[in-house]
Each structure stands twice: as structure tokens, then as C-alpha cells.
Image 1 (cartoon, one colour):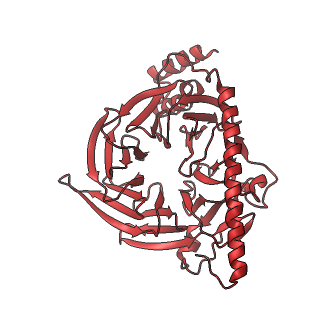
Image 2 (cartoon, helix red, strand yellow):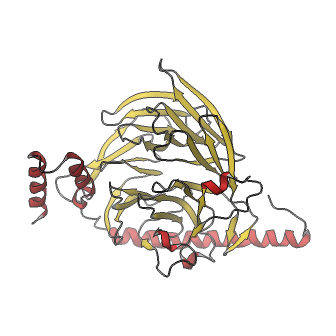
Image 3 (cartoon, helix red, strand yellow):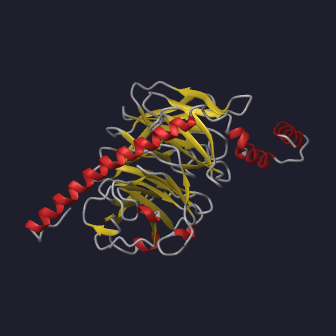
Amino acid sequence: MGIKDRFSHIFHNRETGLLGSRCFTRWFSANESIVSRLGLYEELDGYNVRVKTVAFNSSGNLLVSGSGDKSIVVWDWERSTRLLSYDSGHSTVRDTKIIPLTDDKRIATTSYDGQVRLAEVLEDGRVHTKSLGMYRFSACKLAVEPGNPFRLYSCGEDGFVREFDLRSNCAKELLHCSRLSKGKYNPGKMVLNDIAIDPRNPNYFCAGGTDAYARVYDIRKLQREDASSNLDKPVDIFCPDHLIKTSGIWVSGLAYSNSSELVVNYCNDHIYLFQKNMGFGSSIDKPQVFFGRRNDFSTTGVSFFGPNDDYVITGSRCDHIFIWKKNGAKLIRVIKGKTFQVKPHPHLPIIATCGPEMTVKLWGPMANDDHPLPYDIEKIMESNRMDTESNLQSYVNQFNMMEDLEQTMEDADPCLEWQ
């Protein structure tokens, strides 16, 4: 049965009631032919500065965005309509999440000013905002537990992971992450770029930053301890073997699938998919590798895409969006588009992105025929490979100079404590 006949057969079963709406939606959203037809669907404009972050709510009917002008906008993206706009209280918004099971009335944000803030939409439409906590440096990413309106987690450039109880407004420092250098703990500064909660077992979260190690922690253990006494002991660590003793490569983004698979996006390297049994010393299996894109940004994320997490998706420094099949890592779609963040819809084949332009872009199935990969895809990928190698060498040189300087200062003063 050809693809056109397959479509006709599926649509006929849907129209006659032989295929339920939920099954049809899942099939439609996961179909490779549908994904290969993604194109620019709509642009949401009205900003005067760059949009820094986007996110769908858990049901997918709303989209929230944050920008450099401090504003948060909630969109009815299907109608390209602003439903709400308010001043976040930040200097510049870095990340935002709509808290689940709050009737979309609570929105959390982070910023380069170090704050984690919470906004609540009141019955009369006014918005009340307050600060939940403060990082010494930039507050980076947020994580919310699926189906839990009371817990919020964040990570920051000071290396701390914080937990917020939204019922009592209590904040707790869960841990302070130490940098691993060439496989050994180093007291130097550790920046955490991303954090994600395992949706299958929300007692676990993963954090990654300025080294090559994605660390998994048990929240229950951390809640019983004080961050100042915590020795940064994750329950598992994920890192490709060949990156264990490298420098100049670090985690910029990570995400869990609904079956606890972990995908990690590396600056100056590739994207890797880890199964649960692939932590340090627990498996001879190797993670799956996704090639082709270029990443030298600390803020570039990665996501699973599709109702069954069938695809892996990310932006690239070469101004393209890359989409691979999860199983087999086959590259199936490369879309021209400048992006900082790529956020997939939770159920539909829709993607929201933001980048250097002053708009939010929405991508969906548009064309009548499947899009082939760009005619010059091999040239694009080879250019990305060469740029990555050049950029990595530059970072390695800088890193080695810093390590030599730290060692010289420690030799001069053995009692020196690095903060």
C-alpha cells in the first residue's frame, strides 16, 4: 500500500468511525510523511525586541512567550491572538512555564537578573507577580512535574538546583553541582544550563551544564539533606565514553521521553540518546548519535517530538531546524529557520520557535508533497562539522589556559578555596 493509499485508508476509517479520534490524532502526528511536510505555518508578532523563550501549556491550546522587554504574552496560537500580556518584573526573561492544573492561571519565569518569579492571573484579569527566589548569577531553566501544580524546580549559573513549594512559598536549595573535569570533581564554577524531570518517575530529575556529564538525582534523597552538606552525589551519570576526559564540550540542553529515555545536546559535539541502563559502568551498549547540526550555544535545547516521542528535534547554529527519527537517527527534515529554542506541541505536529527575530514562529504540515532534504544538505552538514571542530579547538585552548592558571595559583597558595 503506497503512502497516498495509506492516507486514504486511514481517513476513510476515521470518517466511518472505525478509527477513534485519539488513535487518529496519534497516528497523524507521528506519521513520517506528515513530519516531512512541516513548513512555516504562522508568525506571532507585536514585539519590539527578540523573543527569548516559548512554551506550550500541558493541553497544547495555549502558548506562552517571554522577551527582552520583560513582557510575558499568552497566545491563543490557533487564532494568532494575544490573550494576556503583562510585565514579568524581570530585566530580561530567560525561561517560562505554565504551571499545570492551575487553569493556566499561574506562570513561572526565570531571568538573567537571577530571579525566579511566579505570576498569578486574578479573577478580574489583573496579574500579580512575586519573586520566589534569587540566584547569585542568572537563573536558567525551569522544570515542572507533569500533573503537579505545587512543585517547581529551577537551575542557575551558580550551580544550584532549587525546589519551590508553591503552596507555602518555601524555597529549598536541593544541591550545589560541582564541575567534573576529565572525569574528576573540580572545585571550579559549574553553570547549570538545563534541568528536566523524568515524566515516568518524577522522583528523578536530570541536570547538565558546563561539563560533559548529565547527572540524575533522586529528589527524595535531596529533600532529606541540606544543599550545603550535599556532596553532589547523583544516582546516575550519563556521558559518551569518548567525552569522559575531554574539555571544551558541555551540555546545553536535555530532555526525557515518556519512557525515561534521555536525550542530551552537547555544545561542540553531537546529540546522544541514552537508555536507562547506559549510565556509568552499567552497560556495554553505546548511546545513539544524531549527526549533522551545529551547536555552540549554551542555551540550545533539544526535545522529543511526536505523541510517542518518535522524533528528536533541535535548532542549529547554521540557521536550520533538524528533525531525526528517534529509532535509527535517520535525518528526515531540515527546515530553514533561525532559532534559539524549539518547543514541540504536546499532541499535534506543531512546533513553536523563537530566535533573533522579534516574532514567534509556528511550524506545521503545509505542503502537498513530502519535502526532500535540502539539495545541499551534505554541504551544510560538512560545514557544520568543520565549524564544530574549529570552535572546539578554540574552547580547548581557553580551557587549558584557565586550568594552568588555577594550578599556578593553587601552587602559590595551597589553602586557597575556589568559590
